[in-house]
Length: 190
Image (cartoon, rainbow, N blue to C red):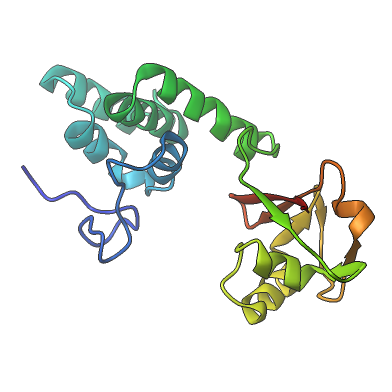
């Protein structure tokens, strides 16, 4: 069995290189990682990770090379198959639907981790909120991500590191924070 390249498309798949798909990943994470592989590896992932017959593998590769099968559609097939192998078919279909909802339709995931905050101040700075919810490792990183346009709150991009949110805004349903394309947290008051 040949060594399979990792999600970076260059080095062998390895936990130490952080370019791996873990068997214990959630269906959503597993699906997303497969979708991030370079197009030139789709056939290899199908052949070596999906357990097809030799005929299926050859047909898949021919359809991909001839343009009958679009690379995105091929990745979806591979991702659903891999998730189905390590979780179940329902999980594979659900991961696909979640991926479509978040990345194609720009919607928010169904299952977002919630974080409750106990705030002393009547207004809280976005940098502090990002840090307290663990969407960033440091306040410096929070400032950098905001300045680069990688943060939105309730679907509205935040570009000012001095943006404040009141206790009233955090009360009730709270706010949905998004960092980058796939990191979400729901934040509300204790």
